[in-house]
Length: 64
Image 1: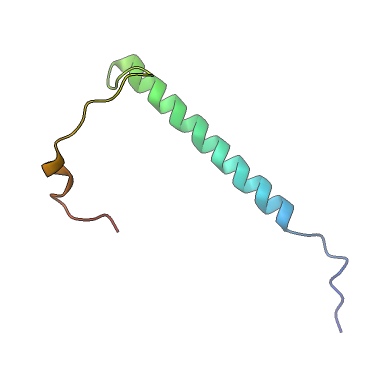
Image 2: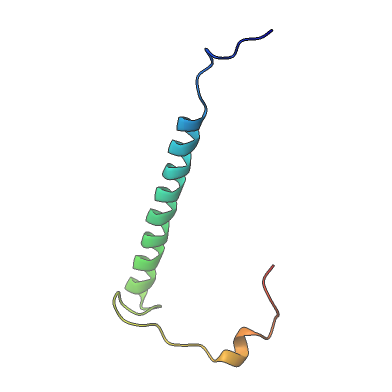
């Protein structure tokens, strides 16, 4: 019978890669938001963005 008790666990690399991916995603999102704010495309941080009309939200149906 094969004994795999000496095999290293794959849990820690999976957790670290997931956390790393989340952090990279957060940094990219922050950079995009800051660049858009510098262009004047979105409201500055702390301000509420303009609300869209409710009728427009249901025009294309649900996102699956």
